[in-house]
Amino acid sequence: MKTSKIILLLSVSLLGLSLCILASLAFGARFISFNEVIDILIHSRRTTINEIVVHERIPRTVFGIMAGAALGVSGALMQAITRNPIADPSILGVNTGASLFVVGGIAFFRISTPGEYILFASIGAAITAVFVYGIGSMGQGGATPIKLALAGAATSAALSSLVSAIILPRTDVMNAVRFWQVGSISGATWEGIVTVLPFLIVGVVLGLLSTPALDALAMGDDIATGLGVRTGVVRLVGALAGVLLCGATTALAGPIGFVGLMVPHTMRLICGPNLRWVIPMSAIGGAILLILSDVLGRLIGSPSELEAGIVTAFIGAPILIIIAMRSKVRAL
Amino acid sequence: MKTSQSLKANHIHAGYDKKIIIDGIDITIPNNKISVIIGANACGKSTLLKTLARLIQPSVGEILLDGKKISEIPPKQLARVLGLLPQSPVVPEGITVADLVGRGRFPYQSFLKGLGKKDYEAVEEALEIMGITDLANRCVDELSGGQRQRVWIAMALAQQTDILLLDEPTTYLDITYQVEILDLLTDLNRKRGTTIVMVLHDINLSARYADYIFALHKGKLISEGTPAEIITEGLIKQVFDLECSVIKDPVSGSPFIVPKGRHHVNYQTSSVTTG
Image (tube, rainbow over all chains, first blue to last red):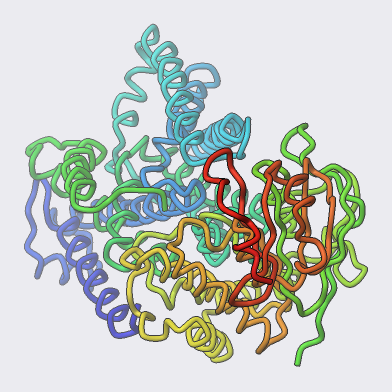
């Protein structure tokens, strides 16, 4: 990709993200004009109702950027590792594994703080990832994309039924996880953001470090080995990064589908297959998509709210169908 | 001129899972030459190449590069000496020719640094050698089979290795492109002294383009030498279980096999044999 095109793409997407951030601070049960939002942000007062409302919308907006970016990068990494264009944390069962551990934690260990959620979700995501990868690697040819996707789908189905089995008989747990289960960023707190941030930073750094090797892996394991890539190590590091990103996000927001699937796919169509660009662009694109979904949810569900996870599914499904129809979806 | 490194297999046994496919092979790849491994389907020729390329770990024995075990050489360092073009590599969707060839520079890249001046020079040179400079900005998906194979070989060339292993580089190509690819590999061998080892299906093209041939049968090396030395009716019978006449290739003078089936064998063989 040419440098001029990259600069143009980056400027356009960052401008888009800024507009989404403004919208996220302005729209809701109470509308505040963009001019006033900017004025309030500059002067940082908290006396009038509008000033308080804007400041209350900041944490969910910040968390929306982080969660969206994390899910976008996580999806890009998992698609690269499995060489499967439709792989994402939910298809590989990693989200469901995180959910099961959080729900189990709430039911049996009475966990309630963000730190505990992240711990349980990350362990659940990691165990599921290792399990799915292990099952998918059995037999001839190692972990092929198809075997991984099948193992992920089967595992995901089994774990979802376990989640239901834990929740259904327990009214208190059902109430605690009702909103969490559909995926929402409205409950974000500064405490949660600070707890989740280190996990996301580690995840992004590991992901960026493995991009050249993952690009080599895209041409097949044999070519990658011939180029000097330790394929097992790269898959492990990339998977660890993907699991951290989606596990930590899922812990606070609940399982948000489609972002990890749709965003990297769209970015590959726009900027080609090089992960060096796909990963940062997926971060920005994921943030835009999630914040936009959150804002739309507030407008559509007004005076109440529609959870962001429901909106991403509604935006994501038709877009994915269009993408699938327009381009040949095939092995990466 | 780079110093050439010698590649050797020391009594190796190898296979997939528990099935032994290579059953005790010792070979030394001749330096700066084109070697071809021939044999019937499932005789282990691809497995041997993959073992040489460290894609498969031998269960017994070692692959040695300049006397060093390749399993003990750091992968990136090894990848600067030993290159590989496997069968059916995957073309990433939407990738351009220049980008794909650039990925051959992985062994020279350090973390997060993009391609540098040296890398671009290597890519340009590889494109030029394979005659695809004008395709540099095209999408690989749009190219014909023959062009695509040239792009893959260019990627392996950008890796700038002394030794290049190719697994059936001409399979699925029209005869025109088969000859073209083998000519380009010969150019590479003559200009740069690159040691080339490949698996080929076509015995006559193997006999014409190879300096040295390894003939495999049921996981064992049964004959090796120059085509003129080893391509005989007896060897073809043993390796492929095929009756044939061996004549002189009217173009190159190398041995040329003419298979005998059950039909159409009534023509006077003496009138065919001209050399």
